[in-house]
Length: 363
Image 1: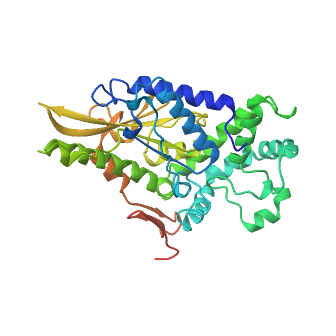
Image 2: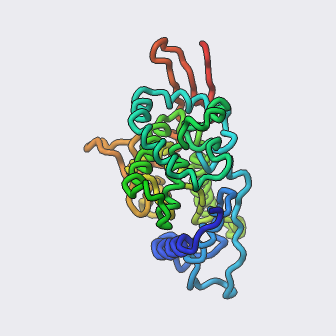
Image 3: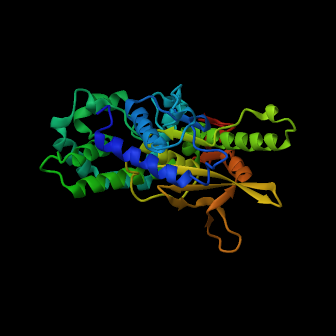
């Protein structure tokens, strides 16, 4: 459905309460208490994501002591967010991204896996027929599953996209409405394969950055702006010169595919299963001080409260992925360039450079 069911509303409000407890005394203090003016919110322009963050805010501010004993209106920015807060917008950010997705989907291990699970895809699609609306078979849905016009014409021969199957099954299973021919094990197998498939595709840095670079770069730039603002305030002589402050908390309400895209483009440890509704990725900006002076800024990531290590940076002694990375190094990683070459000819096929994807058919 287009709206969030009451169970989902309560779940998000509970998450807001949990976050308030986490941030009280750390992010928000007696000197800078929790207040709407210290929060920035963005959301994709869908009723579900907007309602989800509204419910989260209800829990976040429940019982909060606010100035003037009232909660001022909080703006939820949805401007152009559908184009870059999800990895598979329609249309894609770069037209050549679809060509890249098709290229990566043809890798032998992916093709072999699809053959293994082809019977499951058809069986589940057949079982869901009575729940499908007109045109469902022609919907393009997910990374690497974009349908061509030829595919649409052959709709009776192809199952639904894996991501589409997973979303329908999760919805029906949560309401005890699964068709009698499908089991909980079928739901779990589909969800596991969807997660594996998305991670396999988006783990390639060229596709990860094509799909999620704009969002990831914004996260990094927001952190850098916060650092610059704090430094400016420290250097100010007149307090009135620094009356504008970057928010202490930025909240982005998006989709499960957004989470997976961010985990991949940020090169974080990956969960084995698809993120459940209400999952949240937290990026913490941590200032390291020595003798009262800032000497380094670190970034730490966690998913649903569990620390995610950064796989692109290793500890010098243990060679294990690290739990925190310097903001400066994170910025460098986000701007790294990547190429894809043809295995047979060695020809460069795709390049990610300067925030753009380039498809080269010949060199």
